[in-house]
Length: 193
Image 1 (tube, one colour):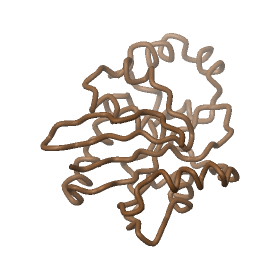
Image 2 (tube, rainbow, N blue to C red; image 1 turned 90 degrees about the vertical axis):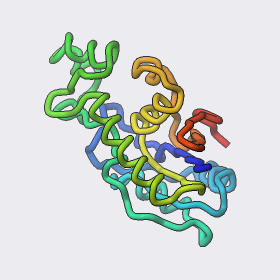
Image 3 (cartoon, one colour; image 1 turned 120 degrees about the vertical axis):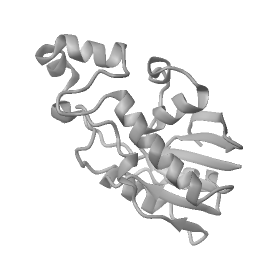
């Protein structure tokens, strides 16, 4: 069995959309980070998306018994395109119909110069499949993003994108997904140790 421990990166304190834009994580809550470090398996592969907020969060979770893997660009957040860095209210004014459709009927709706939920899920699923093939029957700690984690919840639960987006994923929380003989199951979502 391969067990994925998905960790959402530390908070950014941004009040705007943050997708592929590289903003730093606030990792000052050392007590929370210590609890998270202790909660995660001591022996595991550790990887992150290539965005700084995920990389630095993974760095603080490193232990000598955790094997650090290369950063994985395909585990990035959803690509919000021109919306990245904009406040939701500004987006609803500039693109009212498109922005409403993007969140209420996610799937094939594409953010301007960005990607759709389905495009992101395809990119992320392919990366997870590659990593599963390289590291079967182990624990994998993956530091990633809200949307990235939700795509894997969608995959494991077999629900549509709208249902997956209903889940809350807090910063520095864990979501645990088990994969055994091609069968996916979710043990916990948004667990904060």
